[in-house]
Image 1 (cartoon, rainbow, N blue to C red):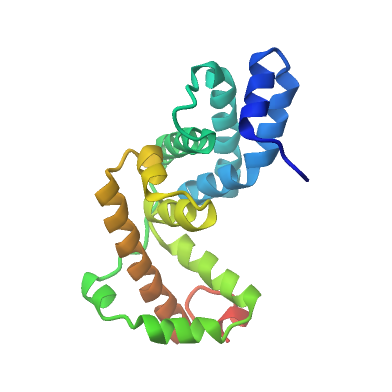
Image 2: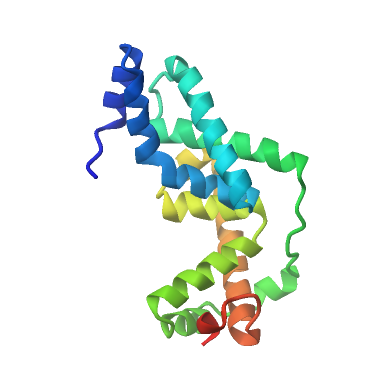
Length: 195
């Protein structure tokens, strides 16, 4: 499906064509859901967060000043909505020993991952993202899946630019460590992805 530029949908909605908001929802639904899921870790909650976020966007559309990209504003609303929901329902996450993180081999992990087919790689990456704390998983999703810049991620999350860079670096190292563990010990990934 070919989508229009966000500004066209926004202008139409602001001019009374409320049905145009469906175009924004359709265009951004997948990434909104992905951000919500990365934080909530639950499909049902992610769906509710996405709906709540789109409702907030619709109600606040007249306050969008277009000083930043629409997606930056939208993702910040999704991020804040999801964080608020998760604070009410704390999940335990996998703690990774910092010494272990320092001793990973990127080349070794990269080589093992390259030996997997595309579907197996996707399952491994999804399993790894599921093991990361919500905020780290979200940062990776925003940077790689949504292709947000460090500056946009800073605006979305409220973190400083340097903090975003440091967290992305540390999170990538954690991901390699987790992938190494999963590939070595066949941990928590579907059997076909363990190879």
